[in-house]
Length: 152
Image (cartoon, one colour):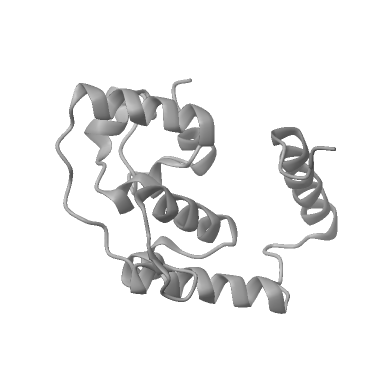
């Protein structure tokens, strides 16, 4: 039997339920439990060290994206993430990179802010359809929901 806990429908249901509870309970921000706080600290430490699982392997770009996205979902400010893992210089935008980014964004739906942490700037995001031409790049005032939806 397949585990459906990670299915997109199940994830969306959990997010919707959390938002609904926060609206009704007036939670301006949810207080993290001990596990959430330990996870937040571990993710920041892994980004700072550039390695995963207690130094067993180096972080790949997809690992960086997923950790930054998760930290943002936990409410961590971009400034503290940048302090732990400063974004690298922009990478050269090629047709192959744009196509790969388009497929990745369609599959994962990362917010536009996270792509900076692997060297992708607003120009690359626009070419891949992650940002619309009128929208500003990461840090440019794009809401997380707009950036997550992208042009797709």
